[in-house]
Amino acid sequence: MTEARSFIQVFLDQLEAEPTKAHVTEIHGPTALPFDGKTLGALVARARGALRARGVAPGARVGLLAPNSAHWVAADVALLAEGTIVVPLYARQEPAELVAMMHDAGTTLVVCGTEKLADGVRAHWPEAPIVMLDALFAGEPVHAPAVPRAATDCVTIVYTSGTSGEPKGVMITRAGVDHMLPVTRDGLSELMGARAGQDRLFHYLPFCFMGSRIVLWTALYRAGGILVSTSLENLAEELKTAKPHYFLNVPALLERIKKGVESKLATQARPVRALYARGVSAYQRTAAGTASGFDRAVLALAKRVVFERVRQQIGADLVCLICGSAPLHPDTQRWFEMLGVPVYQVYGLTETTAIVTMDVPGRGAAGKVGVVIRGVEMRLGEGDELLVRGPNVFAGYWQRPEATAAALADDWFHTGDQCAIDAGGNLEVIGRVGNLLVAESGHNIAPEPIEAKILAELGGAESCVVLGHGRPYLTAIVTGKLAAADVQTALDRVNETLPHYRRVRKFHVSSEPFTIESGLLTANQKLRRKAIEKHYAAAVQELYA
Image 1 (tube, helix red, strand yellow):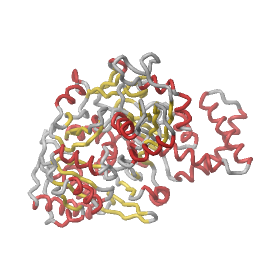
Image 2 (cartoon, one colour):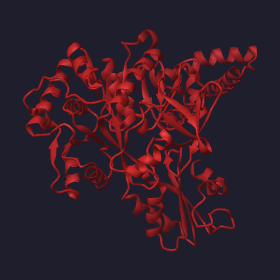
Image 3 (cartoon, one colour):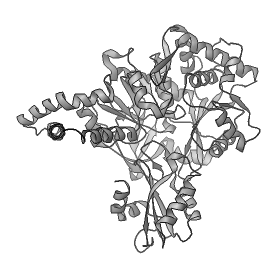
Image 4 (tube, helix red, strand yellow):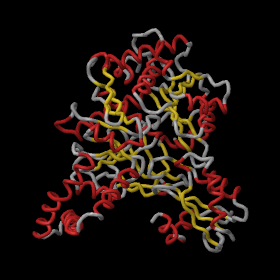
């Protein structure tokens, strides 16, 4: 299929065809720094020259470790254009884990964005073949078509954690991306309607994750431009500067926005608080089809006096929001819709080139994550596990044939997600078939290694189970005759060794042991996680209060 124009060549062609358009704009607080097609294309060309000068051959695995920036984008495009297999890495992950992934992938070059990141790599790999991101743009420019690739060729390896906690490299093919980008392009055009082509897309999530990568690549593919956050510490100001029409979110951020707004409203004068509360009730009855004439009048007043003001504070130019990585709570989704900002959900995994289903305007339902995208099939298997088949499915796990065979059994990808599909084709994600936790942030977290670390640090502990699927943070239930202060000390030591999204924030101590008789252990002494969470439901509710 090398005769067809690849998505990579489309990127290069779009930069050349739109030399004065801002393809990537960095947002630095109150300042926007645009990189037009000519500027970004020149960075890509120089990076290609630098790669050739270093003897980086097509098929080589190259790590890309840096925060989001226009230079990250240029490096990614250059690496793709030179035929390498890009291994994007999370800049906030522990250096030891990053180096393990680099070794696993057999990286022959690692592009580092900062000296701090480079020092972290060298601490665990002194002879690491590092080139600084800035130095990558010092080569002699190469203006040439992208190195040809077959449809089945791997273009990127993205690492994801499995239930064992061992990261696995997901091999994404050119065919998978070639299929996905027209789908996402058309989906965004449908969301934007008359604004399509002039819409403002903002992005704050790390580009190293597959969902973010597809957002970025879609922007390059459609030459629509993307506004890029450069500091998560300053997100509120960046949003005011960017004035986006939409952006991709994880549920955790939308939940924080809702709670923040409601906290501020709680400090307002009593008439405002009362009108907000009555407006919410009226909206709920209207959505349920049970509203009275009085409800409709109250809702109209609340929209004019309270809801519109809240909407202006969240984002005056917002047309909609997109949410992925984990299911969004239906109440939160309805709350944004009440304000006039619909939230469209997307579902997928790294192994499915990020997307399986997308919400379609007019067909969505709160708590559901959309309908299957064109060219892809899905069905429910044993235990209502979602199975997926299509050109978006990955080629396999890098150098892990057994894991690949298990995931791709019977010509279908086994997602590990327990799901339901309604009569309209909308997918609902119920939970994990296995033990893997997917926090609200979207990170995949294996609980077993964390539990082992806690038990190793905490003498006297009998059992430990880490919870947090679909939650804003991790918690733990620990059994044994333990003092809370000792548990906290042990957690502090364990948390120091973990990245932020794998840290346990709260815990509950129980003197009641997990036993086979109580139904909390299997016959071979394994944890019955769902039974434990149900048994301690009241305690768990307190941990997340």
